[in-house]
Length: 366
Image (cartoon, rainbow, N blue to C red):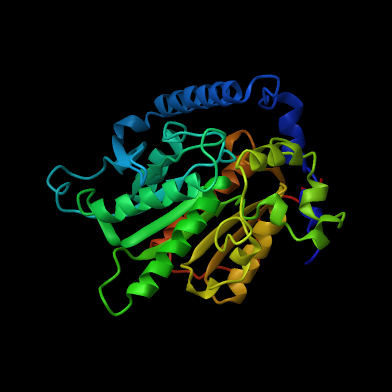
């Protein structure tokens, strides 16, 4: 694999930001569930304020839905719909559907932490957004998260008509750990469709997969020969802001025992098996992120397999940088995301570039 370390150097955009803005603290001195509760409460309060301050509530509607998981646990999700549709068309028009899985290391997160982002996407692209929740560690260990992710998607397939969704235009995506869940759901859906081929028409047609800073490999499955390379992202980004390796290992540890024969979740086979069957994909990679290299390799392998892929790398940025709106890179991220959705939905017919698009400056150069 090529040396990507040039993308891991913090650039002026990041250095100017951290010089005047304290980064969120990780309350490691608390008990596990207290850490989870404190961070979730802070994120939910911030998300509520951002949504209320934005004024988007007048342009979008959302509903709370309860979905039964396979073990009869009730999972709460939110469904967003743009409000720019005339009353006379609301019962007739069918909109594309985006099923979104949040990040948080499988440890943090809820259906109440992404209201602004979901509303913004619903309005800008006239989509229905399903903000899919799932159970978290340490209370629930692997594979509960992956099972829940599939069960929510299965609910969407069964209820897409009542949601007024367009079953011919469904996109699945996620951030960080949520991107792992999205990849799992897409591959499981494709496997089921192959098994049913010739028997019945597909339940839904997947037109895209969106992966933001994806966590694709369990650290214990990481190829040993790459751990010793100084330019490898696990090494270079070991002390990166927001997601250092110490925290990544914390998240991985609380997943519980993970078997080696994972196939499509958190195992190297994700990088090689049946890639050509995946839908058009978007992969966004942060340069100063332990997940940088696995995202880069996955996107490159998809391209080599003939899958249309929009590939973006944000030099010098840590994991989840886009939450800080003062960063120039956050604006570039929004541009890349919106461009990608327009292409996945067929609004923009331009083909994706074969190479990674570099979004921002490398090092101190401006």
